[in-house]
Length: 436
Image 1 (spheres, rainbow, N blue to C red):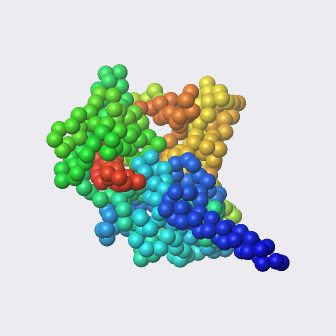
Image 2 (image 1 turned 45 degrees about the vertical axis):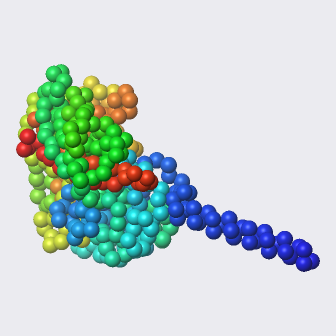
């Protein structure tokens, strides 16, 4: 090779290294995303052998995963892997905006320490017919801790490869710089007074240098912690000093829904409410009693967990590892329905997803919908939903809507500081219709 050819080769190699270094630098700055996912993040499980995902504030099971920045509060993630061998699971967190799109900023801007870590806490099931491995993770910890308030998504993946995603879960880190006053009242629309609940609230940002509240602040109101049912408020009804008032007649008006149905499989030896029969052989099988549509029924109070579930085992000592799995069979009486009326069974156990995994099968000869899935022992809330003409979940036919239904509402206040490339969560409050 001549000196000229050698110089050209070296320059080409150097040019490639400069391009690679530039690409990596831009990636770290959030200017280029290595992820091909353009859709907002959702609570989702991507592998069928991953079951019973729970993520909540460690102080209270089944609570919304919210913690205060730089406090002693922690979140607890747990899930089961039905695979026979332990696997190498890693995790990271990513800062998001109020709509769960990536903030596209460098991890060094929102993380105090490392950018990823391994899940080291796992245990094998004991005395169960269905074998599984139980994994747990607490956040923040010495290796992963947020330093900015805001929305975050927790991502768990396999073998250190972010492309082998296992699950994603939302959580919230709040700085509590804004105070919130709120109330739940009957709908201002007379036609909806018997079915809807309206949330009026006021946000006080005294002490904050908010230049333009109409563009710098937006507020999300959720029902029972469900983002898909949330309503985003981008402009207040009016401003009173340092307070933003949101009470317009047309905003934050929610269908009340109905109290969730539930089933109890804490024991697989004795039938409890809603349990028809239990079979125990090489596997556990549970047949539930037939459910009826409630769309035309009057409101009837019953205790529920607002769609959530609790893992419990009456015959064991530690339900994390000695609660067994059972295949649970559901059936919904729906005479007069047709095959084109799609019905889905949803709850917190499947992140309320209306997809192929939650779709029920319709038997026209019997006039019933059928569904079955694996559930770990415990108490579960669930409901039946249909898709309306806009392909949105609708429970008015299968469950009904009532103003009297007991729901919790979450109010989250987001603020974009001047010149910042991210949104911060500066206020959070949860209220219940019970105290209205």
